[in-house]
Length: 429
Image (cartoon, rainbow, N blue to C red):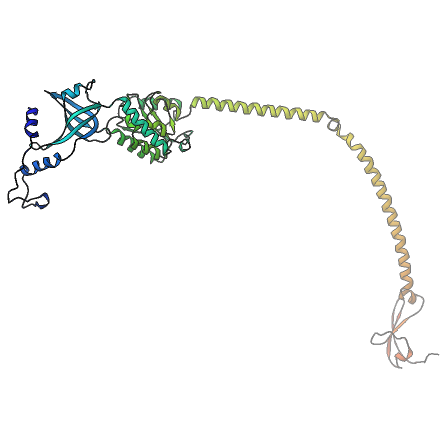
């Protein structure tokens, strides 16, 4: 049935000229002068027929055989896009392997437009299987290119936090990876908290879903480490984690990243760009948190060492104090003061004698000075009967010419003063 349809529609057709009432080109059409489907569909087929055959790669789905043709859907491995295709059954048989859903192939085909149904289909004439060798070669080429950019350099990697506030976890919607990470982490550190994103980890949506989850968790403030975990699988199952787009997103993430993809022998490119590679999801659960029991044991050991150190120090200081107290200077401290007592006693005696001598000497000097002072003092002269006469202005009178008869004068004697008046002035003899 389909073969008959293909034979009829593959035959070249001469497109009829457009009636005079129709627009000559697509650009000339309008709501008033549209093209009918019978006119547009052949034109689309004519346009597509100009395209050259092309080698195209994809993943096989919905494989069906009818007579000498094999019908299938060729799906992109990264984006949600697909094309219908047909292949000669003889070509498929020559592959040497079964063409099953999920297989990756490269086919040589030419696009063909089925005008009647409005379908586009790739009509193939050759098919090649994409083996593990081809996939590995592509991964190695991408690995070399990304390494040349420095994405895998050791200096780009950052250490994991000692105790993360929250652990970001990217896992499959179903699977054991989430259980392995969460169970082992909480067993070691019961206070561990998780921010989990369950996404598709295999197939065409895997790259976009995992990349979006990484970016979302990187934006969460209290997520201190991100774990991408997936169980084991074939190389094809893990291809998403060697995709260039995902690797570049992982390289741009600022939060420390742990890759826990597959088993020990699996090594997708995400392992190389991550800050830490865990051999399995179980290993990742043990690496992102400390062991509470081990930390408690270490703390107890440190406390015991501190106690032992302090005890040793106290014992040593006690021994030093005992040694010091046993020394004669501390056992009989008064004996140490005896020499100083004698010196102090002699010093006191010398000081007392010096003070007495100084006072006696000072007294003699004072008496001598006092006697000299008294001898020179006007008072001593007055005591001998002399007097000092002053005029009314208080000036000492030394000559009879200093006063006149009748002037009042003051006479200073040894024990007081007298008032007098001049009655006679005699010139000096």
